[in-house]
Length: 172
Image 1 (cartoon, rainbow, N blue to C red):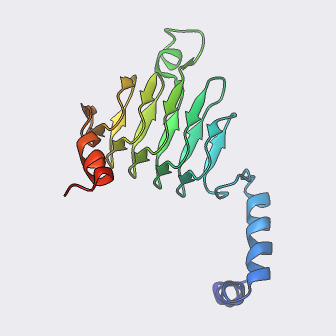
Image 2: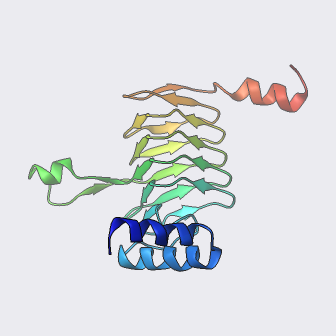
């Protein structure tokens, strides 16, 4: 099979919904991807708790293996985000016998921008925003309505509280 045959075949798939489903099924099987409620190109490891109405974008990872990840309802996790309980640097250097794993929680209505990393021992309060490209490791407990951004992360606690209250109260 040459490139032209492949292009022709993909063109046929693009216009036929049944062929699309079959192609995706074969792709998932051949690449050993895990089916989940989001998309086969969202990588879920372990047993994370993910709330109703939450979206996770393509090529994002949620790793809860041997620890706890809780993502609340109505969160929006953009593409290319890593939420990962594991920290293996001590293990890799021979300083520890096991990979360190710490829990992660995102309460309801949290937005996580593209290309961000959220590591273990991080608890993000509801109605918070993690800006694109943020690196958040051992973030501790971040209060609701916070803006978190940067590498190493900066937390502006309560940043969105007045804005949301003004909107709900009808103020402009």
